[in-house]
Length: 406
Image (cartoon, rainbow, N blue to C red; front, side, top):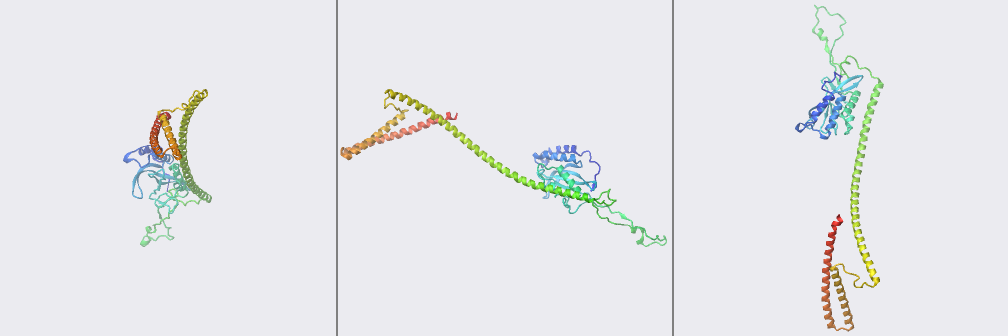
């Protein structure tokens, strides 16, 4: 790690992010970035907010190679993440890649140590390749509320508690203490092993964590146990909060799924109720039309009864003319039915007469044969008239259909 250097170049910050992202995300065709159109505006807002809060992170577009060998041009935020540790400010070099499915899936965060930096072994958040894989904010990433600004703030806080990078100290020559006895005169020269350059040797110094140019000349100060306890408590509270948020998210997702299922069932029932109401309304309209027809027919019958009752009281109405057929077919059907019944009664009377011996048997057979022939023709005529009446009724109903529709 290195202390925070000079301020960012003039082209960085929110203004540069605005200009670059407006150009990059508006491209179409083969050079277009592989992000969904409905989230490009959200991606732009995330990167602009990040560049505004952390000017040391600059949005760029570069070629990213996936683990399966696929290559794609993706957006990244390249630069340094500032952290505060042991009263000093350090900048961690990092790259934040935005995959094709961002922001529905979390970004990829890599630390890119320089030549004089090493990744701390067995760090809880960073693996040996520099990938930040176990950060709580990345594990609990939720679309669309999660964003890059909160992610970098969370990483800055966690890395300040336990920095993942440290610098190696530069080995320097360490002179040995001067000899207790004076050196011999030049005439008595020492052997090659006693020459001055032979007593200097580079003594390797162990790595120290954390290290910086300002702190390399002194031993790290002893930390206050209260501060250590405070940092550990804060880290534990943060981890607990993220774990509780992840559990709450899972429970709420299950609750939302159940509510969606109830909503779908209610929609199906609503459609069934609407269909039933529609059928009932149609049936009500049909019954109202039939009721109107019955009322009209009732008025006609009541008027006829009133008229004929007045004639019967005066004695001017004839019995045979009291009931008149409605049309020619009805009259013909009345005559055929009366003839058929009369022939039936005549044949019955002949049967009684032949049983009593009043009519000779041969005369009975001739009369029955003639009457049966006439009855057959009358019944055939009744059948034809009935068919004609049914056809006429169908024609009248078809003629009424437009009136009902209107």
